[in-house]
Image 1: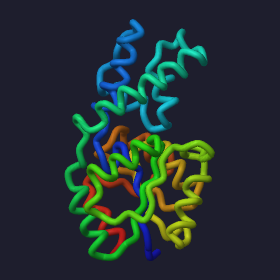
Image 2 (image 1 turned 135 degrees about the horizontal axis):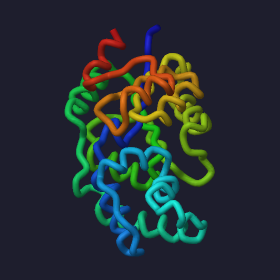
Image 3 (image 1 turned 90 degrees about the vertical axis):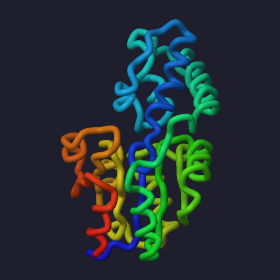
Length: 217
């Protein structure tokens, strides 16, 4: 198969955002008198959008809709004030993006991060490279792994889904690729473990970003 485009997840794939996400949510929890979580716990809270992050972080017995909505707004406010404090590109990602650009491989980002924050991260950390599209969480577009968002990206790229490599670090990402007919590539430098990615349908696992280049040769 000749792959003609690459689509990336953002958090845990291109960018290590975990500490900033955890810090923002922990400030919300502390504000409401709830116990906070260690940063590593957020590896399993993130990946399904901001609403699910809030629900997973809140105590199991405090899941009423009103509280979740209040904490979601608080989380978005807190994250807005600290989204780039500790976030950084993963080692090897700049080299990979440079290699793809040199080969003129179209690139896009498909993430469950709210669109406004996805765009901020693109401007701050990824503006050196040309991405065809950045599609994040927004009203009217179902979050991954629903195939609606991926199909929008595929149409924008103008290639067949089976000609696209989709890179992600969670089961949600692998389900997304499978549901949309893209080639699912799991990355092991992100938030989740190898077994989760394989069980969710990963066809390939990468331990370093530059390993992706071999799939294009």
